[in-house]
Amino acid sequence: IERYKGIIPALITPYTNEGKINEAVTRKLIQHLLSKGVKGLYLSGSTGEGFLQTVEERKQFLEIVVDEVQGEVPVISQVGAVDTNTCVELTKHAAEVGADAVSAVAPFYYKHGSEQIKQHYLDIVNAADIPLIIYHIPDFTGTSGSIDFYEELSKVENIIGLKYTSKDTFFMQQLIDVCGDEFMVFNGPDECCIAGLAVGAHGAIGSTYNIMPEKFVSLFNHFANGNIAAAKQEQYEANRLIRKLLDYDFIAFEREVLTLQGFDVGKPRKPLQQLTDMERSQIRKIVEEFPFL
Ligand code: HMN
Image (cartoon, rainbow, N blue to C red; front, side, top):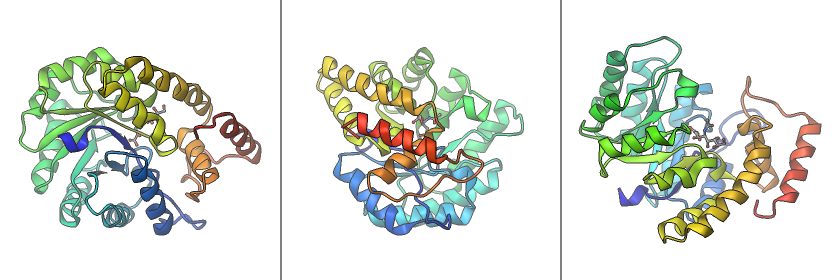
């Protein structure tokens, strides 16, 4: 649990100009993020575009990341999919190639009852000897487990935590209360990172930690040291940027910023927003306004 405490980027998946996974840029971006003090990497989630990739690509990407990280920090692979079989296949693969944990969104598109969703998670955790971090993102999946639902799953051996992408901090606090301190909860919305930490989140997984890892590592460290005023200052500064970012699709925006930072991560996959030249030049101006980028 100590190993996971901190800031964990939900890694962008670098693509080549042809839209294939870009191994060289992936390795370079990982070294950069590690050098900034991130405590793990979260792959193939919303930010990583796992849902827009083939199973083979998801496996290939994980293999590259595990090889580059060399055990320095935990690697968490998001294996969620519409169907259980794909999740099971990706989980077995993740265990085989040495990922530290898998994570999964609730099955989406079809409307399932909570019993089926529970069974889906049990099938994943029973597929291989690798811990599971549930991914709660009700706005995207259209389903939200209840406090009781998560409490029950938190008691299952090898379900070690939850990534919590919602701005409802009361719900988060209740979850932490009933699941106990050994069950890790990660804050999802970066703009509310300090709020999540304040109600007891153990760490934070998010997309903007790709583009400003230092800001949030600093926020986390200040918070951990009880320097709340300094942590709050970092959150305020980050949020002035996030507010601008939210005028665009966050993946398109962050890919553009990374490109300006020297990481040629390519364009997001359609149907994600493809930036116009005008939008790209607006983003360039924003980057100039924020020296911490
Ligand atoms: C993931 O890759 O799964 C995400 O990073 C999830 C993460 O919690 C992000 N949430 C969403 O995109 C809905 C945030 O990092 C978010 O992008 C950021 O707070 C800006 O709003």
